Figure (cartoon, rainbow, N blue to C red):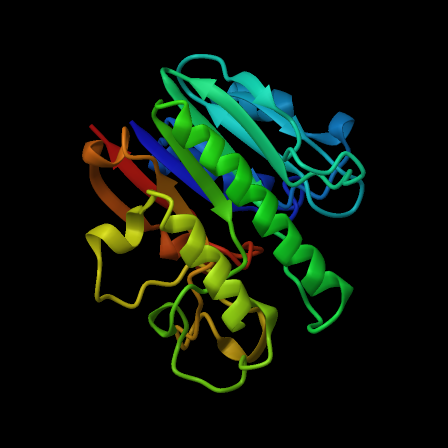
Length: 256
């Protein structure tokens, strides 16, 4: 089973690129973030013609998450991250697919920091940790996949000081990610590539993609029941270089 996560950065604007990648890569499950469309505007028909069933939570202008499946239909188990009924941003959707629970998430960016947006990021991280702990207690195979908006270590960002004040690399952001992983999750990409600089995001400015000046922001975390099935993990970097591309590239794993 091939499971991927892809911050599409506007699913309708990047639809041609998405469909091209789906045809070439043939992932079995895909988690999409930053749909940037209302529910009714989600391109369900085009995605169905490509061979995928989908569930999604849209949002006008920003956010939005979706799960696509090439096999069994996704059975939705959550449409919001539990813990705050007043939070209506579309940042989390969860479904069971072929015996695996898939949590697709788009964690808040948190900029500018310090400030309320960074406080929201850390509060969301805390809620995610609480829900993740409950998932672990269920003793089922789970993957948490998405744009976590954190580069966990210095290895996950190109050598630079220009991002030092950004929310993506703050000690509090990195500590929150580390606490989540320490619950018992396996960071799939880092598990198979412990010492390699691998990036999943390149800003549009200053030829950062061409210079490979990127960050690793997109992660797939595996529960202890799923981690032993991990066989491959990588990033489809070339997708970022296509005309009209998202600023992220698809990140994927292969499970036995």
